[in-house]
Image (cartoon, rainbow, N blue to C red; front, top):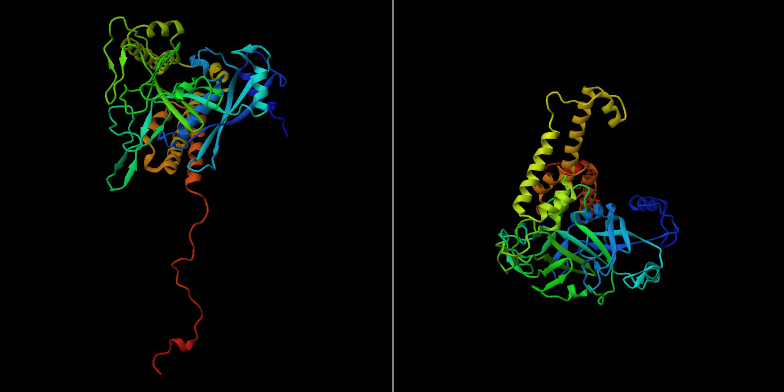
Length: 440
């Protein structure tokens, strides 16, 4: 039986993949716990989808900052630095009412007496060990909040419903409008796409509580920019990243507000590029530029210009990368390169055969995953969206998402016989010959 806080050999291996130097078991404190789930928050009419939680798990495995009180954003007056790192996670079935799955994240803190933000790592560890500190809160982002009535993105002009409102459906039934946070519309390989930090928090009294105490339309100014709390219906441009905190049965949704963008209730953001206003793009687009091959300097330069210019540059970069990847006359891979890449000597026909088999395997895996998604969510499953998303994902990612849907399906459709196999069958028994005589 392992001691609380002491990493297993497997955990230490994962930690050292993220560390810049090799850390020993004695140096690190490891702990885990439930960080979120797919429970619908009644007062917010909002929930995180299992698919989004799966994206967060993949982000966690790449390494995510573990903070104190969300001070990454300077809420509370202190611009904090990480105390540790989230390095792994998993999704498991939930037994809580109204919740099918829950997300558990693994964190580590390097033992140290150095004072950071007024607290040392060892002091923080002591409070976690004694149970004084046990609440965590995740900071996440997505640009898709699906409406339960129309299935469209809630913060777009395509959706005309209001969360919490009751609507009459075509069959005459009544349905309450709720929102489901889905994975971002663009998944960038090797990038943190949704989960960007987890924090240990002082429940109800930590500096970042200013967010949970704010009301719709409030503007929170930080060194990271200005954030507007979204409570009622807003129309935002497509692919606008929404920021959120999930903590203790509450979800707060925000949007970063630029000086030259005005948010109006029931109307789209007006972008008139007023003189003297900032013209920088959001961080997600900046990451997208870097993700497809731009250097940091190139991306920053584009970030300082017009959005249209940046998008055109992205398109050109993408088209050029496709041209490079396309087979060209006279371009071939040498035999020694094939051996180096695949670890064995293969002929051209054998390489093509493997490629074809790989394509067939990927297609069968995607079809199987889609079928599991339909089984788990029925008519609410966005088949076309996931078919498109799977074309950019690794087969391992597709398998992980399919496992998540399988958990949902098993919870909503329990296994085992629920009917009597003999129901409806005529019960017979042996009858004497006299029973078949006619007349006297």
